[in-house]
Image (cartoon, rainbow, N blue to C red; front, side):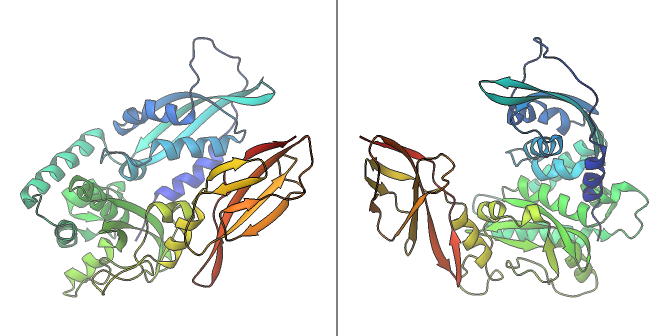
Length: 386
C-alpha cells in the first residue's frame, strides 16, 4: 500500500534554491502563473524532460509560487491524461529559478524564471500504450447512453479488482503506474488508483485520485461521482478481497471511510466544496451531504451586496436560517470597524460622520449540526456621507 509521489514533493521543497540575479529581458513575455501552466501542460503530458516558464506575481515565496504553478499545471481538465493522471505520472521534478522584484505602481511585482527538469514513472511509449488499451477496453465494455453511471463504475472496478494483483516486490518503479497494473497485472495502490482514474475518465465518470494514509501507511484511492455526491472506492484493498473469495468492503463508501485519512489538500474546505461527499454508503436509503461537505460548501460562499445606498444597504440572500454580520469602517483594513448583526437583509448603518468615506463588507453565519460556521467576506463597497 504505497505511494511515492509525496516523497518526491518533500525532496522538491528542499531542492528549490536561488540561482543568482537577472535583469528584465525585453524578449521574454512574463505571463500569469495560470497562463504559464497552460502553455507547458501539453509538453509535460508528453513527457518533456525540461520546461522553462516565465511569469510575474505578487507572491514572494518561491516555494509558494512553485506550488501554485504545479497546482495549475496538474489541475483537472477535459483530457484524461492530464489532471490527477499527470500529477501521479511525474516521478520527480527539480526546479531551478531566478527572480527579481520590480516596484510597479507603488507595489512590488516579482518576475520569475523557472527551469524545471522532470522525470516520469513511465516512458512516453508506455503511456501511449495505456491510452490505446484503455480506449479498447471501454469499447469492449459496450457502454451506451443508456448505461448508468453505477454500471460503468462497477464494470471498471470489477475489471481492475479481477485483473490486478498487489505488487509486494517494489524494486521496479513500474508497479507505481497504470502501465504496471494494466500490462503486468501487478501494481501498488498508486498504480491501481491511476488506472481507475484513467478508465473512469474515459467512461465519462467524474473521479479523483486521493492521497493519504490507510492502515497507518501511505496510500492512494479514488472518489467517484454517482448522482449528486461523491463516494470512496479502494480497488487495491478490494482486489485482495476478491482474490481471497470475499465480497467488496471498500466500494462506494460514504465520507466516513474507515481506516482512510486524506492528506490536507484533499480534505480542505475548497476540495470538499468542489467534490461533495455523501454521508452514507451508496444504496443505503436516501443519501445526504456529509457534515464536512455541508460545512465546506457554506464556508466557501462569497456573499454579495444587492444595493448600497448611503446609510441603507440591501444584501443578497445567502441561505435560510442565517445571521448577517456587517462591518463598516473608515479604514480599508476595517481596523476599529463598527459591527451590526441582523437576520434581515435590509440594514441601516448608524452613527456615520459627515464628509467621511466608509468601507463596508459582510458575511453570514449559520449553525450547522451544532457548529457555527461563517461564509467568506463579501467584496468591499464604499459610501461617502455628505
